[in-house]
Image (cartoon, rainbow, N blue to C red; front, side):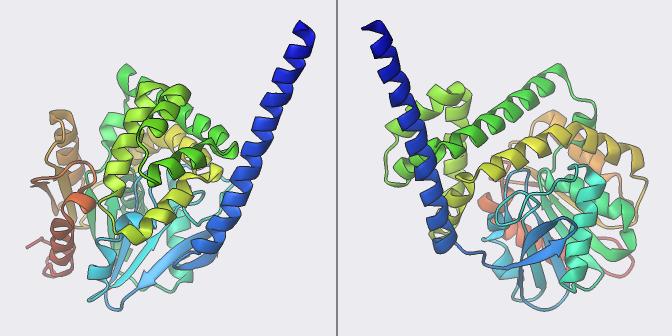
Length: 343
């Protein structure tokens, strides 16, 4: 009887796993139909990058956070597109962009961005607007190609010195983030992420919390709550698109790869970035810690025309909390006098 019971249990487990895989595949097919890319796919190296181009005028390029996409700029890009050419895009493996086999080291990311912009025929000089992890890519671009830039606007950028010399606490946090991303990849393949987000989209709070805690502990549940709160600040029409991206295993896999490369990429910027004349405006979140604020000051000092503005009423996602402040900062960089100083 015990042997028969074990066989029945194993068959049940296999049936559930197969059902989950089929549920995920069907959902992915529906996502592709309901959420086509709003921009276009550009061939860059061994991958296709999604770029959303709008407006005309001086070029303004948006670089998203570590696991974010072009959609994170939806409160900013349409406004800037009324007086500038704007480009938001998805780094390889995120959003509508394909994965890349190449290492996610900083200079590779810079070259992918530059090649994509050249293929879209975006003129120079360009303004780079970058959030969080995207600040490393923007700084890398400024280090390699300063003549191609009008200026940088960095929104609560990750600390270069902080991550180039990570503490034990930072290394533990990074390891946990990589672990959760890898768990997310497995769970998304089995349809668990899709089931949880579908329940959340229908108003259920209890079930998603239970699933998040069961699969990734309290940290995973807290992360889910925080991210849902941020997403709800965006226009409702983009919510299904973001949900579709979160259900895609490739996005979790890419997140793990970008997280793994974070200390190495920060160290590369610290080592290779010399003084620059490119105007650099750092928007620092109101709730930034003293250590983060100090790192923002150090980043600003990389430029002879660098400055820091503390944006009141903001957390890490400044573009969602205070889009007006970001739009104002971009206007400030675009309107700077030819002497290079920010007005």
